[in-house]
Image 1 (cartoon, helix red, strand yellow):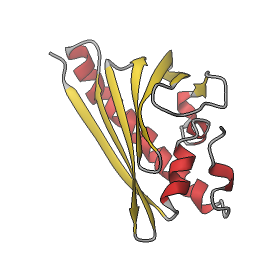
Image 2 (cartoon, rainbow, N blue to C red):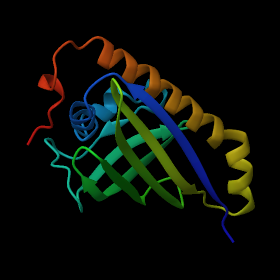
Image 3 (cartoon, one colour):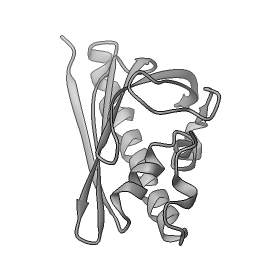
Image 4 (cartoon, rainbow, N blue to C red):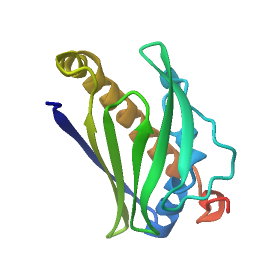
Length: 164
């Protein structure tokens, strides 16, 4: 039986919920908030209209091993949430829920990732040795990149509107 794990993180962003959501609903911004050590690149031609059923292909490296990753947008509720699920990639299962909640002075953005690793007991060992710390590194980088992005952009909505 495969063991399931959950990673959760939330971040306050002092911007309107619609603006924050628009930034994350533009798949092109993923490269901007992903650490260089992953060599992350979106393969799907842009612009990518985000809606239920949208497929997005990526290329990245984990521990020096190149991977292709395909996700499907499962749910998309403008200004509130969207989820993406891995169809193929390094995980046995990956379900990433992005939530956006209006709070005083801005938006609370939540990442909730439910995942399983392949290879049974070897996957459990890999989580303790590599995966858990890699997820922490990736999401810590994202936290800083998101803060810097919103701190250095005085324009409201302008550069973050999705390309449709």
